[in-house]
Length: 428
Image (cartoon, rainbow, N blue to C red; front, side, top):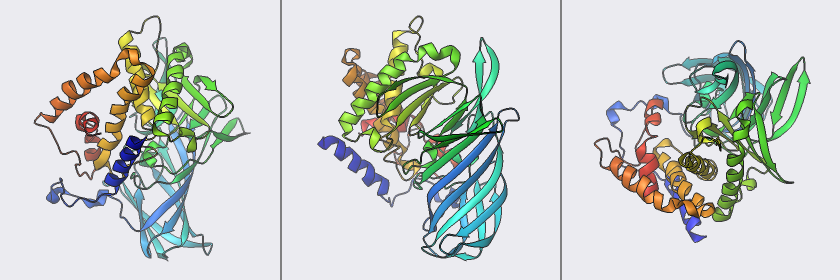
């Protein structure tokens, strides 16, 4: 077990390191994209959303508890494409409501709130924001996804994809990975739909044909791994007295979830054993996997609610190839590894994204080999990842430093490349 603790120390050490040598051209840096440090810390978010599946809009309300680290009069957080119509700022130490003015910087995706007269160091505050937004069709933020039957669009679900900088499209927040907080999430939706999120359901309340589903509080986590889905999907589950493992998909595909359900549970148990840190220590109740027709990535490792594209999770015994079966297995392993490397332990900024992806890419072979040694995935790692991918990327004209400084959302997006995924695992 010494090896895994060395790995975690490496992650923690690099995440806290401050490098003197920077990779970004100083003449091109616009720090207005970054949140100022040392001003406030968000402790928890109470987030309530009501999606309209007909108009493709949503109403939102977020109450963020903050601790002031300094005396100041400017709050700076992230927001994008949200119509904010009410902001309230309350000193929880005195119960006094402070006056405020807010101004949106659209270019830098920043919401600036001026507090009058100022907020005081070490005081706790409640920042309450009401707003509305669009359930977009761009597969970013809180968006709509098609439900297909027999080649026809028969409806939509409301789902999320927040990595790396898209949580701000769903709710105003401190949308940088270092700003971890706890989340209390609730969703109001039509009673013909179900809602799922990172944690298990706390309660459901019905009123006027609508259901409000509230979820248990999350552990400390970054905004980019928050997730929720409102759908009419079905699920199969592997449940015991203490824990539930589920796989969701649309009704016509539900017979294809068995392989993911069986292998996912085995992979999770193997990761528990190898890391000696049980998944249930932080997420005690459940893990959901959901397959969506048009999910933009192969999969996304949201803590407790992993979202996949259908082709990377669902297996049809009648038509799927052995290669497809193997691909599904390693992708599940990759995303489950992230529940530790990325979700539990998180680099403080995106320049270290290779730590997330490098560990996950290595473990997708290593852990899968533990439960399916006959596939010889340990040998495949050497050929597929190192010789045919990592070395090719490292020798290309587009090669970049492992730790590359980035500022803008576009620069952050561009970091999710072969260097982060393939070369990253050479260094594990």
